[in-house]
Structure formats: C-alpha cells, structure tokens
Length: 243
Length: 179
Image 1 (cartoon, rainbow over the protein chains, first blue to last red):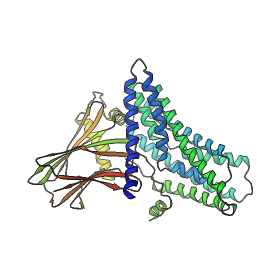
Image 2 (image 1 turned 180 degrees about the horizontal axis):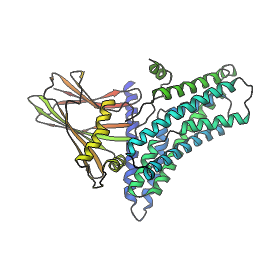
Image 3 (image 1 turned 90 degrees about the vertical axis):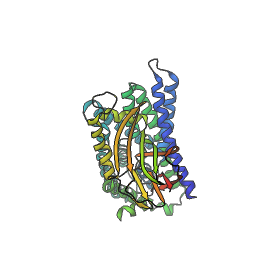
C-alpha cells in the first residue's frame, strides 16, 4: 500500500517534469515562421500542467474548501472563486517577473524566492485578518451581500497573491528565448487549468455541506473559520526563506 | 512541536510543488573493493538552465568562467547545502557531513542545459557494508530523478538497489550500493 502511494507520488513528479520538458522543447521549435503545431502543443500542455500542478497539496485549496464549508453558497460562486484566485495568482507572477526582469538588476532566481517569501507573509496576515473578521461576522443570522463580497475578495487575494513559480519560469524562459507572446498565452492557459482544480475544491466543499444534515453544519462556520485562522498562523510562522 | 501538531492537523500543508527538475548522473570509482570516489552530475532542466544562465553568466559568453562559477557556487550550492542539503549520503547507515568531502566543483553548459559537476571523496571514510545516496530538497521546490541508466561503475560493478526516501508529501530515489 505504502509502496503504491510512493509510486503515485513519484509518477506525479515525473509527469510534471515531462510537461516542463515538452513545453521547453516546443518553444525551441516555434522558430521564426511561428510554427502552429508547437504553439498549440505548448498551450494544451500548459493547461494540463496547470490542472496537475494545482492537484498537488497546497494551501490555496485548503483555504478555499474551509471557506466554502462555512456557509451556504452556490456552485456558481464556488466556481468563480477558483478562477478569481488563479487570475490573481497569474497576474502576481507576471507582474513580479516583469518588474524583476525589466526594472531591477538583480539575481533573478534568488530575488524571486525572496519576493515570494515576503508575499507569503503578507498573504498569511491577510488570511489571519479574514479569519478574525469572519469570527466577528459569524454570530449574525445572515451576512449582508457586502460582507460576503468583501470576504470573498480577501480570500481570493490572500490565496492568489503568492506568485506562482511555475508561471514565472515559463514567462522568463519565453523572454529569454525570444517568444514572450506565446509565454504569456501559456501562462494564461496554465492558470485556467489551475483555476479548474481550485474551483473543484470549492465545489466539493459546497457539495459536502449540502449533503450534511443541518444539525452538523451548524458547527461548520466555527470549524471553517478556525481552519482559516490556523492556516494563516502556520504560514506566518513556518514559512522559511529558500536561499 | 507546534509545527508537528499543525502538520498533523493539515496534512496538505506541504506548500511547494517541484518547479526545478534535475537529472542526476552518478559515476563510481571502485578501488580495492571500496568506493574511492563518486562523481556526481546534476543536469538542470532547459527552462531553469536558461534562467540560471541569465543570472550567473554575466558576460553572456554561454559559459561560466571562474568568477561566475564561484558566485554560483556561493549562492546556489554552498548556501543551500548549509541550510538544506540536497545531497544525502549514509555510510553503513550513518549520515556523513558532506562539505568536507566535496571537491572539483565545475559547471558546464551543454546543449542548452546547465550541469553541475562535483566529486565526493570516500577515501578516508570507513566502509563495511553499504552506502546509501539520495538527492532531495525538503521543500520540494527542486525534484531530482535518478535513472539506473546513468549509474556507472569504474573498476568493479557493485550491487545496486533503488529505494525511496519518504518525506511528508513527496518521495525521492535513494540508491543503495552494497560492497
């Protein structure tokens, strides 16, 4: 059983390595005549890479599922949340990559890790803030649409703001190899893939909630808020610098 | 303690997924039935090779000269090895501290791939039964792969076996060499 699990984990890493290699090989094959096949290959692999990439363990899905466990939300809202997060995640990685590359003269790979470190701390503070806010709002019978919208945005922002190194890698590689437009398109496709997986975790949480008898769901807001708070504390205390 | 408790509460908290992929190549030299030296080559993936070359090949001549290599070694290799070593070696079940044994650090750039070469010296280390070698990054940002095809012996071919190192949420290959 254990060996089986190990093999799956190993395959999971190998798969990502293959995606990574396929994307770079195809970038090199685009050439000056803008060959269509490699571009299409890059975009479709980027999408699948995004789905698989987000499948792995991560705090984003934990945050989103805790959040959607708390209150009655529609599947549409759950779906939207995944996309809001991946949109922010991608924009964050794109802008940080561009700023570091075009505006600052730094050792890129090291500085990117450093920026990620501080963004994670900011994200942690945001998450703690949201948790405290939700605890305050929890005792009210019905939250107003305003409160929901505000907390939705904060959740999306706190989960998405940590820049995705995968997106950064593709973008920077595309700049270096001289095909930035395909790089940006690949980043967008990758984030659409990641959004799908994150949405799925929100939808699963929503479905779990709707299948659970109301006696039990009464404690869900408390459990959800506590999980969000603990996650924030964990990120704040235990995130370490890579370099 | 608190960290362990939180990891127990949230088994999904391993944050990073691998973003940098390294293929390892191992060349053992055997003398008098013992491992004399081990030459290690880490071949970086194309994407990250380009990014690292951009960072360290400051004169843009598509290779790393002595000065550039030193900078790379200082930031990328020494600092990381001190903080979270990627190379893990056990001799007869006992972990060895690597810094004393590593030499001949060299960086190549071939066919768009960055390759780090270094040699681990086993001459002064007592060896009786076996040596375990694995490469992993506790943060799972860098993923190493070990292909039996790239494990070679000079002098004498020893018995090898691939096993897993199990971290919280990833696994890495460990090569057991039996003397």
